[in-house]
Image (cartoon, helix red, strand yellow):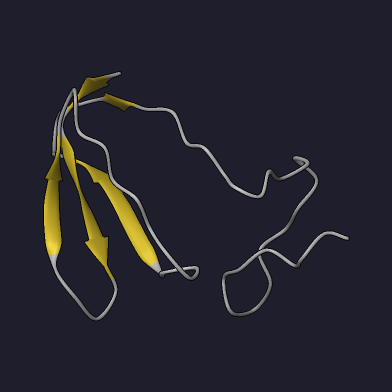
Amino acid sequence: MSGEGEIEVVGGETYPIKPGTLYILDKHDEHYLRAYKNKEMTMACVFNPPITGAEVHDENGVYPLVD
């Protein structure tokens, strides 16, 4: 992972993201990830339960449950 940026949890706080940072969201927390201006950011995202890759955000910005 590389670069620097921030995560903003909607209705809450903003936290810096840099190499070595781990952030965990709960209950489908609405959030925004942003690279800092003139910076690139590369990261990995893990979903549990896993997603299939065919999901599309609905009007509320969430993925539907997969049976």
